[in-house]
Picture (tube, rainbow, N blue to C red):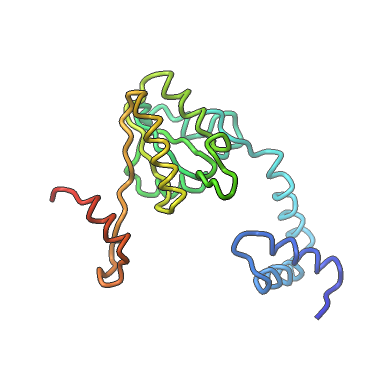
Length: 198
């Protein structure tokens, strides 16, 4: 069925969002049509202001509306430990554990030669500057357990070693609550590698 051009345009734009397929885009568009002008204008204004008001933290590269994000401005956090993550949204995953009280560094991607993403396309230089300034004892490499994430972690560990900083990798393996019978070989191998004393 053909929709009026403004509706078709909205559906097409919504489909560009990650995780939104044609049916989801249509549902969202029709949902917006049922809202008041004030509600849809508020949404449009929030999207419009997003790129004007959000920037990268000048220290860790997380998204913020200030020069320095709340995590970097927090004096209670441990400056000696930096957790390196791929994307800004990974920060909330680590924070939800409530166990990590160090600092962060966001790379904004992973190494992927097939997609033309090399070290120069990632935010690695700032991490090296932070380490060069002194006081950093450990860098936790918390990249995803994908081929690209592993390659990025190995690359970073290799360039951090000569700097006298301890580079550690997050453990990977069997998720809590799952059954061993469903674990694939790679996951089981990583679980065995990351074993610890009990």
